[in-house]
Image (cartoon, rainbow, N blue to C red; front, side):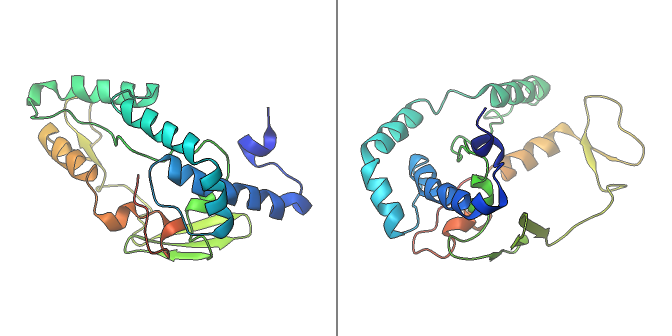
Length: 199
């Protein structure tokens, strides 16, 4: 097991070098997902070097876009069976295109602008802190009593929760899978001329 790759376990003196290695991987991850990457000179050279491999990977990903990973397949199978009675015009599907994070630490780098320690949107504000990234949502409820909605048709619903019809869930789910562009902004590219947008 490579502890640096999978858990970012490095000694404190190696931390800056480790972060730099992870930051070099981020443009490759963005390009592999078919998204624009920051115009960093070092990153551009790396992307140009791997351009053929990245194009081949992007084409393979496009061709396999209908193939779901095991977790997505189980979730979509459950949704299809649970909501079969609604006769929906199209099945409830999870996002097709997303950034695959294959290395520990990449999500942390994607959470903030490439050359910054702060990101803000209408939904949250994020800051770099000593041990990672702090995300402060605009609305943060400390309790779910009376506000947690549960879809009818499954297990019994506790009295402190609100029951909603299956059609309500299906409509909310469909809307959630089509968020506004601002919600899909990849913070790492937020200050770039071409902003990457993805789940």
